[in-house]
Length: 410
Image (cartoon, rainbow, N blue to C red; front, side, top):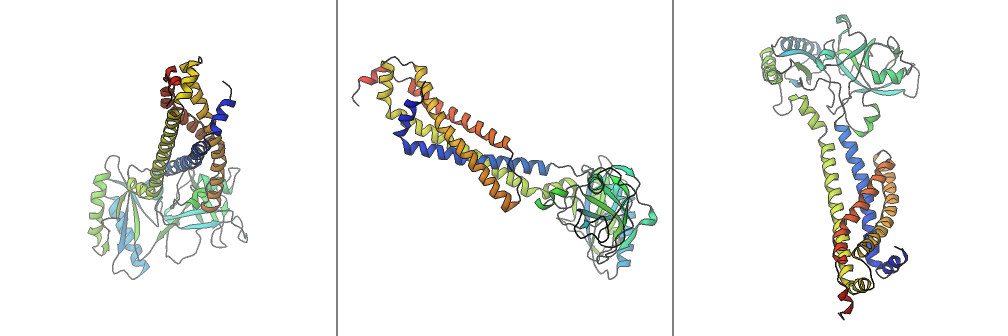
């Protein structure tokens, strides 16, 4: 089949041809970027934290009537002892925060005390020697903190600890040759901090876009944060006893002192609930982008069906003439399929360029990642197949036009 007759016919229907081509182009541009966003969001919300999420929960306890940091520290230690003694609890630890919490305590890291530009950024967890077991972290090198290394600290205390446990991602960032254990780095002071342990993975506290380059760069300091505003207790239940541990833990804390507040909505959270809340916006965005993509594809398919059906109605006499001159049903079918393919091809070429332009704009405005060419290629294939599928029914209807239509005057 030659292309010239098809192009000649399309020149007589410029408005409809341009409309469908532009619709295909716009759909391709939006769907490619939408599917890329969906993939990013789904990958983001499924990132492992390094935590034994099935058995871990978090309690936020806010103090009432506490006036000094030593009093806070004493109450905190008593609470932790009470939690660790519960039959359903494997371990518990105090902390300033926890993975996926949203709020962050992080520090710039340098390799020398006088370095002006940071080497990297790391999230900071303050806790004791029980945090690794409580979270279920895997210590792959070095050791845990010794009891004599744990110290209380206030909110305004800016001293860097002499030792720290870091994630493998942070260790590799600081010492790419794999020699981080026993080496030092600097944070907020002139005092060096020595790496005494390395854990396989521990995710940061926040999940914002800016922190994705540092997602597993975290460190644990041997500090108990004595905040008069309250503290977090991270608790790890024994396997299969999460519900029992979450039921008994608040009772154990209130038994220590009633001078506290545990918020009924946010004060006691399983880690599965922590994850759900942390990624609510990502999940919502993925669903929204999926709906937008489905609607656009449906509208584009409906437009192709409608326009082709209109053209078939207009050309019934021409189709009848071709049939009378010897064209087969297959010839008529192939004609409309080829015609739609040419329109769709023009649309996807324009759409591919538009998709890259939209992605470039989102990179500058929203710090998006560059759109991989595979998404554009997949979008092109989907739109071409969608176009051919949409035109199939009207094309089959055209192929069934009888040669007798050539003799009709209307």
